[in-house]
Length: 474
Image 1 (cartoon, one colour):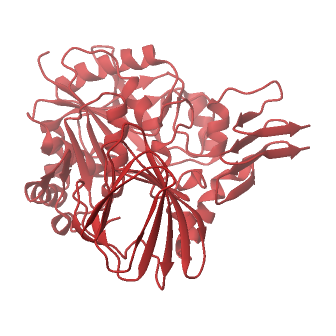
Image 2: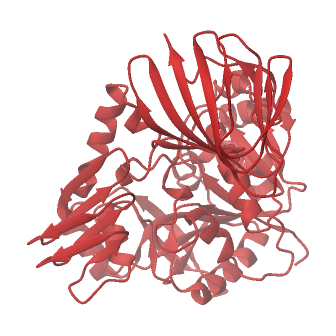
Image 3: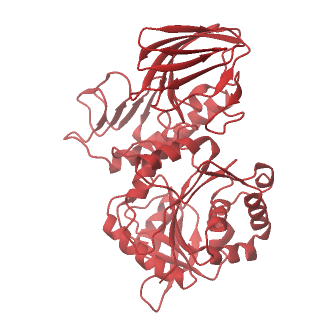
């Protein structure tokens, strides 16, 4: 087989069921939940060494573009493309955008969600090799997870007749999430698999089937791709055109309707880490069955998950409890009720609370800032700038800023002045003054910024020059 195999990582999820660690601006795929690497990075690191394996594509939300680029950079991976969806339209359009961006219609797309755990990499590699062969013959291949329990939280795939090659099965039908008794029946039957959301398919084959069953979606995706712009390492999909795209999953839009759907069984320790209880299941535990992270002390605590990000968490007499501490929120739940965490996330979003969107520590392409104190007319931030990076040239209409360097060396534009400041030196930037912060040293630059004024929102920024192509976004 001479066709290129392109990993396509779908990284558009918001991860609301993993709040408060996962936020809409920093969802679970960018977090190191199971290992020292993030879930996105683990997805790429477990790819098998196949002939003709190309550099990956990533489809993600525009707001997450710099996190994707940085996490790939940390692995030394140069992506084939980072496709930026202006808004989510589910998986069918996301895969269509990747197929349209593929160099050849004969390229095989290996479609992988960015936020799954797979323990047995060898079993995964063997299943991928089989799937690629079947996809090369024109099949649309999905990976069915061999079930181990009667799960009611997953959709199922029922297999049909076995292929002549004995390497997979024709898909008989896709099944919605069942009730418990039905799930038990599926497990006893042996012919049902959990729907993993992983696929292998030729770019051209997928587009042909999409045109057959959902031509309007394909037309919009083509138009949005053609009108898109190349921006640094990113491919910006045209927002006005893409806004017209129907929202649908690849299962509903294509896989349930095509005559070419094939399922490959996958028994590799798969978990979608869709809740805190799922994370507890796949994690190493102590002798009491606890999964502990951070500064945690326990007394008479069993079968629990305790996660600390910024301070000591102590528990006494807990059983089957989840406690998640971050610098701005604490969530406590029974392990059998963690699916309801999304109700809290939805309520926070409805009430427009900042805890739904971002952590106190916010990442930017140049580094990060941590809002350490905020009042009615003041805010204090700790700002870190990576070596060689700089903030945009900007000004504010409602606030003044006082900068104190606490680590490293800063080149500062303050109006018509250029300053070079080191530790314990400072400068004051009046309202309406053009300014910029740049790290010209070899180590991270850190400053304390004190803002004062009538309005302290992040949207009070008028940019004049920016290395990262940002306009109205932060």
